[in-house]
Image (cartoon, rainbow, N blue to C red; front, side, top):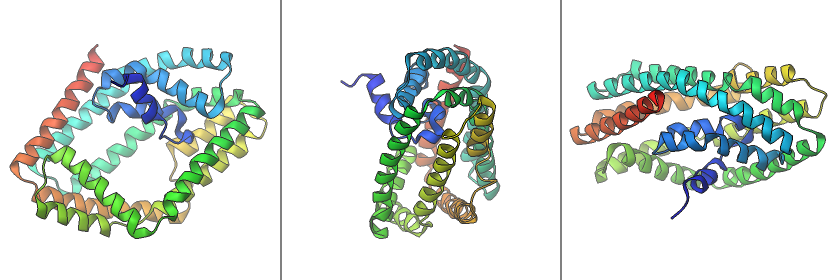
Length: 292
């Protein structure tokens, strides 16, 4: 049996470090046990930072002291927002989705994401201001390994990449809706293949942001300067993004919106009940986590 901490450690390793301090927190909405994720959140973040920066004992101690109140504030201030948002999602799903519901979901995601990262930039600025030249090189080398892996995936033939995306989409929908009919699966696969192929644009933008952060780390810096840059990268990423990236995001969101509405219209009563029940379990976990 895999120890929960080991399982979370492997999952955390998939995150890119320019969103380093959010890695543990974002797992809260991805796993089957929010309490378990919160229990190991500080450990996950420290493990990830150590992987990318080879932390000193002083940095590890300081980060540990900062993470405890940060996670406590997040639990008591942000978790209720997540719960309230998911209650609305459940209500909208129960009656059937509309175009306005999808727009609301995008806006809510953007708001909660910005709030999450905004909570992290001050402490992130203090930490990144403390890294020395050796640690910057370690960080740069780790990013390069990640980027090399991403480049290999992007360079794969488009049909192969789109096929993998379609499989992942079907797996995700089966998790939320339960069993799909053969007709539903075939239709979803067709819709997935028709979605814009934005992976190259997204990878290029991520690498651009990484280079901006690395350029900052190669210069003399203060916690305030680093925090300001992190806020630009994490909280307001689209304001200074290349036009190609902004266009790609808009196209993908529009296409996903059309696909989501079509899937919702074709969902059976049992499938809708399956999704609503799954959402309610997640809402209950969030509520319990907040009141603990």
